[in-house]
Image (cartoon, rainbow, N blue to C red; front, top):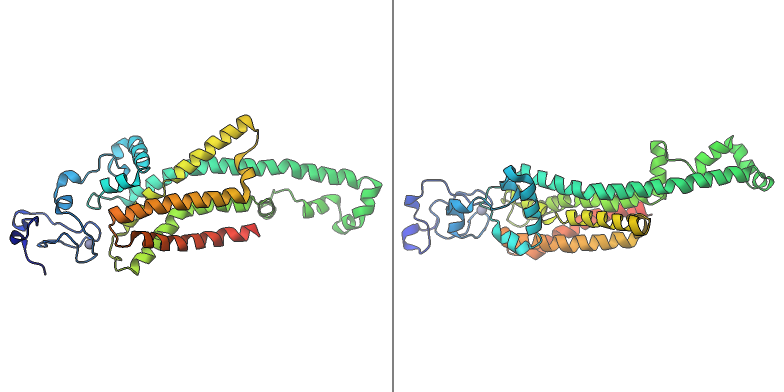
Length: 320
Ligand SMILES: [Zn+2]
């Protein structure tokens, strides 16, 4: 137990403080402590951050301003572009809300999903024309003598030209043929790379940071603080979604093609790199200035190794 107030400069006068003062990260009761460091989880703070009620409501944070959802969303998103300033303006003693954080993530995910899903759908629709043309060509060719020579025997084996076509060039009109078509056209790989993994990314990062926290003696840190770091660091998805939307509009107006169609593997790789760099940097700043971890960069990097291994395992099978 540490010595009490009076003799230590800057320490609170506990005789005068009626309310309970707890560590904002792990809720350990700090009553009668003089050193501004939590003995339970190691979090370092300034006494004023915990004792001054005026500092508890953030000026614009989405979590704190349900009365102005649109404005607080916009300001939280824009201020997140300056991670250092953002994470030094926010403090764990300011109340957190898991419900508002999840809501914030859902809005981010929606802004990301709509343009990407529209592009993927456009990509899917654009494969149907060539498929139908191919089938029509086979039917026409089959009617000629050379066509009958080439695959007449095989058509006989299938029973009809339709059955033959449905085997080699099936229309994606049942779950099984749709799955086959999506795989064959690489749309499934694009769906996994552009939609599934980016949407899972925040949650995989959250889980791996929790797992990693267990091994770092910081396991007592409340999960909502890790969630806060992850949600506000991964809202870069909004900017990616808006870029795709802008790219789609420009390419439709001037090139007459869809954006994703031409991206292929290079786009997937570039996307992963940009995503990784932006999110890792933002998470690092959060872990350094908000959670005040001793080894913020190492912590974040290790979590990302786990996340990208899972991502590679999701995407790789679709590319084969
Ligand atoms: Zn603590």
